[in-house]
Image (cartoon, rainbow, N blue to C red; front, side):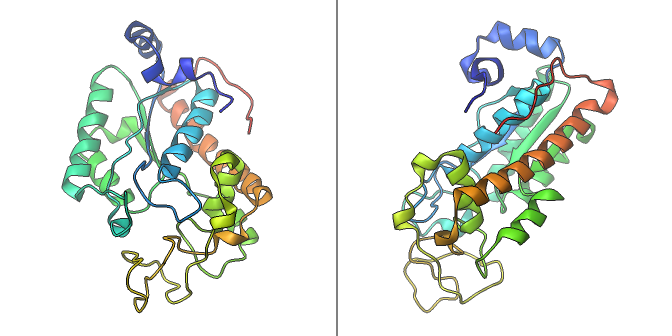
Length: 260
């Protein structure tokens, strides 16, 4: 990852080190990224977790933040027909976010960034955070703009997509190419260009049918596209994180150059 993981990921630190960093004003980051969610034939089930931790590491390096362990279970109802894919109910997921976020803030951290890699998790996270002090929390979605959506539109060759597709596969080719099996990448049928409901591998007559589990055309993915997408995504995330860190007079202990 190219990150000093022992300075940023609290699971690799001792509790007194964490206490000292909190006392010094370190911002907390809570990544959300599934580890049991199908991503086609060509990407592993922990694709979202890989992205969440990679991006959290880059943000933490820039603002010298502390990263809490990734929430690897969430509300992902669209994938449950595929082996190994798990989902929590909305109420359980919201309670999980609310309790963990509340404990992080209650434990002394003055600010919390919730870094979200999902789509179906966006609304539940927002609802959960309304129960906490929103002046101290920023909910970041990794696909928020303005740069990333613009670059994605410029690069996209697929006619539709949103999951294990050309864009996500390109990102993984840039982040973790050794985990991508492009020989097994398979496009989904073009039957429903709108955002689908639950995907199915078992009903060929369904508009949401996808034998592989991808929604889009991952065969069009390239590492070059991934590098461009990742650069735009990091600029967007760094800008938002830095603005949040600066609110209320907080100044990060160290600032570092952006690396990819």
